Amino acid sequence: MDKQRIFEQVTDLESQLKQFCEQLGDLKSQLTTLLEENQRLSLENEYLHQRIREERAENGKEVEKKDAERELPIPGEGYDNLARLYEEGFHICNMQFGSPRRGEDCLFCLEFLNKTK
Image (tube, rainbow, N blue to C red; front, side, top):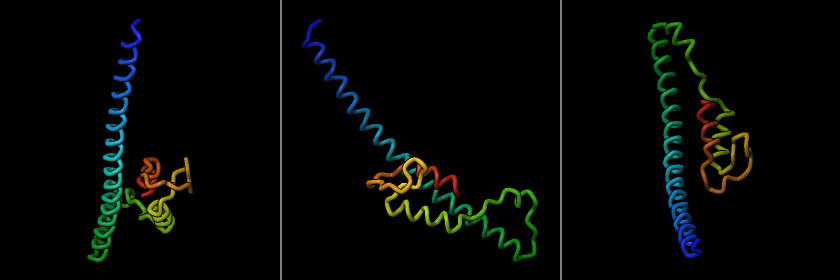
């Protein structure tokens, strides 16, 4: 085989890998943004559901049993502390709990925040 041809193939492959890494980075950034927005909207949605239940209770209307079974508890103090730690730049996932995030979002931490709502 021609050594020059092999070198060109390796160079082409390297440039393709760089492009894939850039695309993967862009996708990761978009996914992080979507997960954060989803978390925010989920919390807001739960808050609005709670307000509706309170309004119904104040007006003397009973909440149906099905709605009561599906109620999710509003995140408490522990959740707030974990969210605060994450915002301060620390991991809250079980993989790297307590270690600094170095300014990057962690998909495991964001997923954990979504599950604890």
